[in-house]
Amino acid sequence: MPDKLLNNEKPAFGRQPGDLSPREQLERIIRVDHAGEFGAVRIYEGQLAVLKETEAADTLQHMKEQEEVHRKKFEELLRDRRVRPTLLSPLWHVAGFALGAGTAMLGKEAAMACTEAVEEVIDEHYRDQLDTLGEDEPELKETISKFRDEEIEHRDTAREEGASQAPGYELLSSAVKAGSKMAIWLSSRI
Image (tube, rainbow, N blue to C red; front, side, top):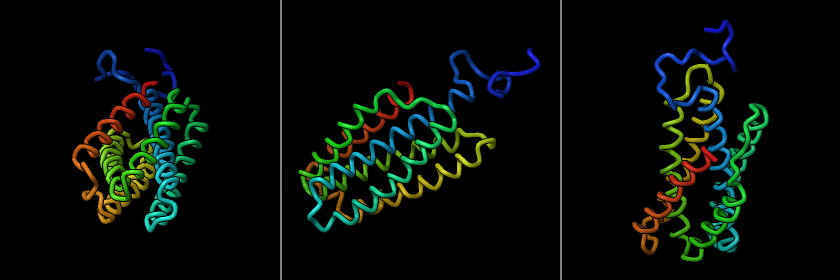
């Protein structure tokens, strides 16, 4: 075994063929989290474009502002850790806005159902990342934990604002969750 391992990685004992190295895992986490926060901002921008003159506007603006902080932090991490962003950003730019505007056109409750569904998936996603990250990434774990708490707040706010009253709630929620999971899978790899 060489005296020095590349990228300060630990030996591969216990890893299976095809398993990601610690560096590759870290890159995926940062890449996908940046993509998700970018997409979240676009969803809120789409919702606000439709609902800007309603009682929901202040709530949506607050959540959007939190997502912008999250996105900026992951942009810093991309730069500082020298991780390339997902190549799918142009798609998420359009798809996020379209999802936000499209659900908002169905009404405030549908916009909230979209938020609830996305945030349920993100809660699980961030929880899995916290379980995956080792103790050698305390700052990243703290960041993800803080952002997860805010995503849970968004989910709870959406519920309080009538998400379950959206037309076709079950179908809408299931579709948004499936799309969110697919976006996570794609963005971590592409």
